[in-house]
Length: 125
Image (cartoon, rainbow, N blue to C red; front, side, top):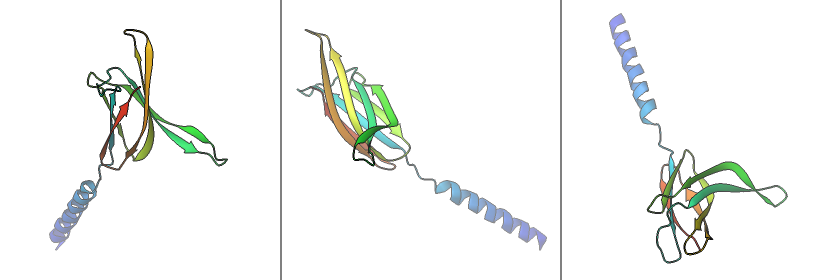
């Protein structure tokens, strides 16, 4: 009888361990930002900033501490991974040097959903 109780306890523990680990949900949110110029050509080396704007009690807005930044690759793309969903403002800038020095800027908004990827194209002008 004692052996049956030990076997049953072992079965219950292993079943509990399997169900608790298999229920963990992937909450990663991947934001893919594509930067292009006004004619649709990918912009290499654009500085991309994702940031959250929060409304204050007085009706104003402030930028939250939650920020992420990176530089686009040769294809004009950059990816960010966050653990939780959020809505981010996007600001992309790039300094062009030929034929004259000029800074182009683009903005947008991206909404990240739990366990999903979101993609946004930002046009820099």
